[in-house]
Image 1 (tube, helix red, strand yellow):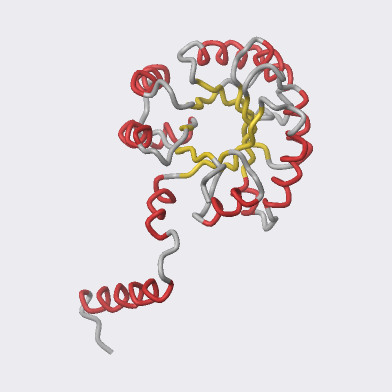
Image 2 (image 1 turned 180 degrees about the vertical axis):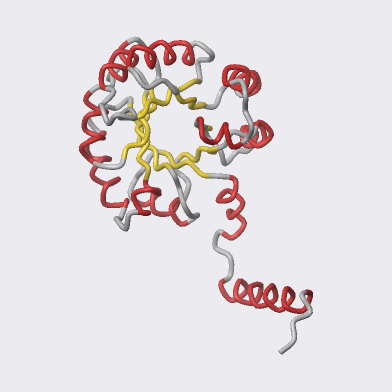
Length: 234
């Protein structure tokens, strides 16, 4: 396990991003406007440049926040200019549901490393791949976790997209919006290239191949301890 799949850290915490950059288990990093807002980031460019000042080798994905293609292209070029290891995240559609094919195609042709994000079905993936240059490195981020939230099996969708993506050797598929540690096992098993994980999931590496018998005992002890410390009586 972990001989093929790359693991990216998904965060907007400077401290965590710098820590993950030093960790040999982590191959790259991603972030997005929602995570940045959650972490109190006020100045997008200042934050990104500070991150890239220390993270210079591992790929880092920053997302555009414009909604029309002209501005997306402008933002994409600016973000890309911040570092050679930068990938520009562009959602497959905008807030009106319009496919952002022109922005994806023009930026990719121009040599901008694009990360097409928020993909949740095969049709979207086909459109993304069709518009990505075969000469420029790129990613396609399939939001497997959100697909699972709808009651659908993301493995089936990711498998189909993996077959399609073979037409572009410069493109790698990312299993994104990861919900649990087992998703790493699933993604690795089907040949997914990359998976993004949060700090919460990363911390569960300590349980990999952990004794289930001991895990049961640990769990019972925690229940017992919490009840005792709370002073419960019946």
